[in-house]
Image (cartoon, rainbow, N blue to C red; front, side):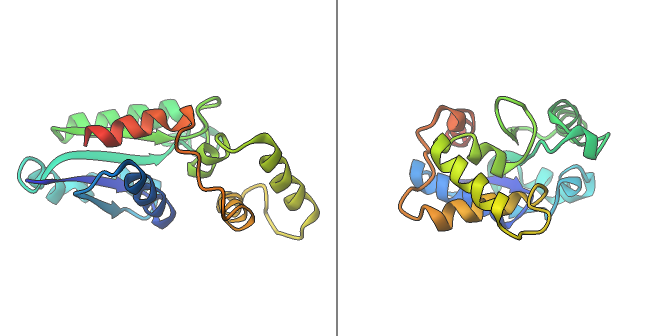
Length: 177
């Protein structure tokens, strides 16, 4: 029992969390991908994990997007997400489990890209918005990943500002692992 487990939705989430863990110099963390938000709430996905908590894993952190209530009455939005994950953790008696709902800290809506965008300087955010406005990307308002990709491509020498206060809650949860 020397490692902890993080469960997240997808590859972009995993890659971001790995980068943040490296920045924090935190090791012995395994990250599993559940592929989407609805899978985060499927009780059967936790059968092995609940048995492994306390033996293989000392702690569990479930990281997933808030999304928007208008998109999903049950799991969408911060309050719905919070209610559902707390019910899941309680119902499955997942000891040493915690969660972090990824969103824009101001609006409590969104996803990983919303959190990241909340930490970049306004001038860089404006450049990305202008690029998207004049480009021919389809569904640019709905494609959350495009923001992150444009930021990484357009500002390769400006990594995420992990010192920004909007990352503090997530960093605290990771450090507790």
